[in-house]
Image (cartoon, rainbow, N blue to C red):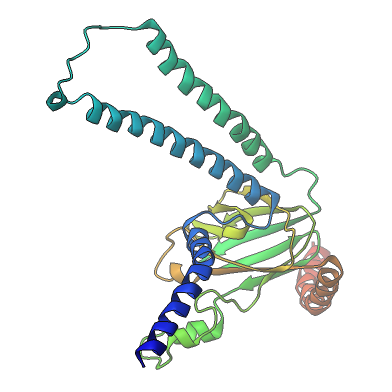
Length: 286
């Protein structure tokens, strides 16, 4: 019995050693920025990692020098205070080295900021409007628009005394009734605004979030490289149901996206035509 337990323990230890790199990678991915699926998000991630390692190396060198000095030149070891008051070389180095480091960080950061604000050459434009407590998506120049609200299963489970275990609901509070559908491989211009209070449209995989402010339009862009479903949330406290405004983006291959768009146009055409009749009647009476 003891031998069997020992064998199981050794096998368990071996399995733990084999899995430890995977576990460490999973933990790192949870703690670190997501790399995302757009050039925008990848640029932000690379810039973040570069500056992070610069800070880590700087911290190791500075604190290493401090701890070394404390141990090496402590009074109990017979150290005598230095008898000098200034050094032109030292002053030059502690001014020049930080300045060089700042320039090294500033150049790619400036390029990234310029790239982030460049919405030119966009293939399409989507207007995102925040409401209490839902989103509206309008495909500019396509005649398609709809609201996106928290999916019914999540909305039911969140109610007091619903009797539903939230853990049993897939993508609890992160699912919607109408996803934002976009094509892969096309630069999409986003116009973000709000109809009532300040909201914020945030999808981590895209690499950015934008405040949705009443009476003001913020511009952003995304070029999603990989098909998939990418989730986010409202990131600005906007009222009692702020926590129930998820964002779901579904990226489709171009052919599938065009088929979806044509279907939406066909479904919304009768409503568009009906809303246009009163306007024409008013214009004729004038």
